Image (cartoon, rainbow, N blue to C red; front, side, top):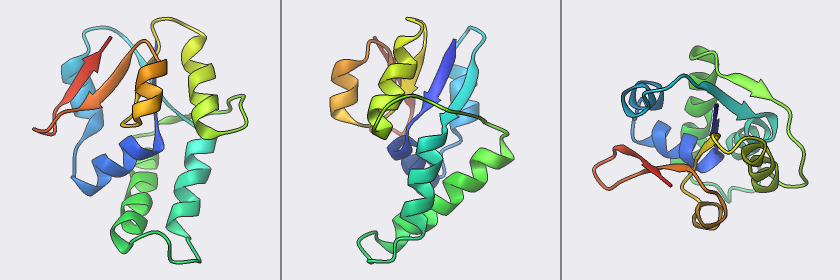
Length: 128
């Protein structure tokens, strides 16, 4: 089973100093592999380097911190198929019905069977 990390989830966790690795360990009682699509990493790098100043300073620093945490936690980077980041995550999630996506994206939550969300108390919850 793979736990797939989405861009908005990583940025939210970085902004709010939420240790998603520890939270996932507390939430899940089965073996899993934590992965991040290469397209998510590219998206984080674009946000960090935003030259048109469309991204706020907090989001830029959160993108940078999210990238650092991915490296520090040795999260496996994987290549995915799909034109967009969301499409590639959905394709990856669909390979195994046990795969779970960590996302805050409302559209993806409606498409996917199993997602991990963050509630108002900043706790991870598994929605099926």
